[in-house]
Length: 169
Image (cartoon, rainbow, N blue to C red; front, side, top):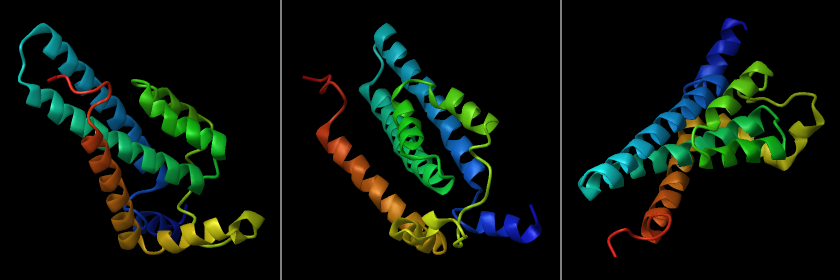
């Protein structure tokens, strides 16, 4: 990759699709470990409820971030709807993002830079691809919109309460 392409890759969202996806897939695994550990601690000793609330919130935020990043990389690298949905859905299963990350890495599905310019590919003329490139070329705005969307989803989920209902009833 030439220096201009490397700079182009880094100017969008701060990292290449590969680095961003790998970081969030790893983070998802780490926060699963923290969440499961907090659940075990709660089952074994009388731990303060705030422990599970904090760890669960951290995991929830990383889970949502992973979903967004997996979607962006899936669109960017043209994984197709099925593989992109699978990547997002695997975050529900503890540690499943790690083998999937290894699979997409080995199969070259993480290769390439952010698609900031149109190519001869006919898919680049689709309205969604044009909108996607428009946002990629405005990274500060793109990150702001993504953060607002993730925050709105996070707040909605917190308002609805933990999966399975409240444990304090």
